[in-house]
Image (cartoon, rainbow, N blue to C red; front, side, top):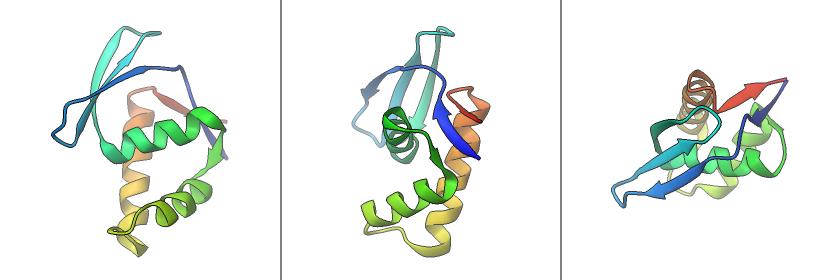
Length: 89
């Protein structure tokens, strides 16, 4: 199963580790964290599996590794899916 972005949104970095994400297709605004923003950016380029996202995140992040990284990535995928910002196919 792969993940893809449902629509290209607009972001604004608040400077306080939260990102304002505006979804033009639904007209909704969401507060997301930096990891969720990073996941959206990765998925905007190409659809990826959870394993591919985790692998890329592990090579990207120096501070969060192992089971902690896996839990964080999975949680953010669930959050983005619940906001209808990404979908599985």
